[in-house]
Image 1 (tube, rainbow, N blue to C red):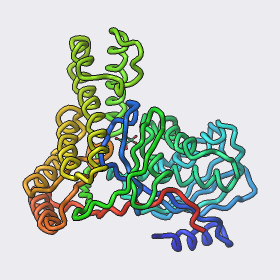
Image 2: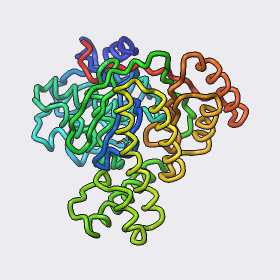
Image 3: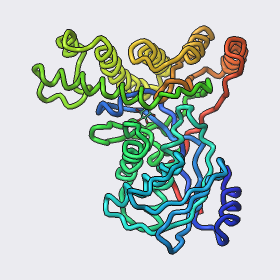
Image 4: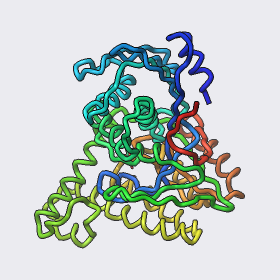
Length: 384
Ligand code: GLA
């Protein structure tokens, strides 16, 4: 990782000695997509790609930040009115603001950071950045904030300073990740359980289409609105205890079908079905039944493509090749609108699958998809 480069550049920019070093990872998600803002379940794991930051208090009221990857500098006070112009700096500003709103006392600091979580690939580079700073500031300033609240600080940063009304999955995974384990999280109760994930005879691999949808955040927020609207309509029509789509069954949804737009109905149907798929997968994992896991992944892809409409032709193309090659499970991962597919592949098919996917994708779209083998790793920590 880039720790030494970040330390070096910190020293060049801000003078020695370098401060403390913190890191927080990106994540994968086995199944349970767009369920986290519906009070339902997700199944993420932290990965071996992360953001690394060097931080040192500077004795002023200002935060001075150097982005090693962008070779760009930002400086801000932590007043609400001092929102930085650079969008990348808003993540750090937002984390500071959200800590202060919760009563945390911060003073100025100098920091340099870099990351190797691919941007816009569905691996949560932004949550890795938020979690790095939430974790670091909490530790450095001895604020005593628990990790759940640190995750909420990252999420609130997205809501208030980035404009994405995301759920809690990404920040949670980045903070709670554990080497070799996926985590089943109930996003309503925040109860979670680690599932050791060492599928004998299989590999987990991501194929990155490199497609980035410009309007992804507004499309994401629109999906969330549809879900909240559908849950409200069910609640107001005979089911007053319904809080989220998590509480809704297909029968209930059909009862209110004529009160919903076709679009909202499709979105809600996907979420109701996805919720039951996560539970099927967690049972299957207890039995090492990866065939069932894979079947559910394909169904998720179909739902995300046809009902939730967050796939794209490049992702559908990779999904189809996976199916043709006999890959056990494959689907679009993360928010969608581009990014990666996650694939559960039997060892003996791995080489052929990658070859075919790369060759056929390149022939169709003019470039090969990037390949990332997944290593499930620990969450946020102080490095040194
Ligand atoms: C993004 C959001 C998450 C989650 C996923 C889809 O990664 O940040 O909260 O909603 O999309 O599952």
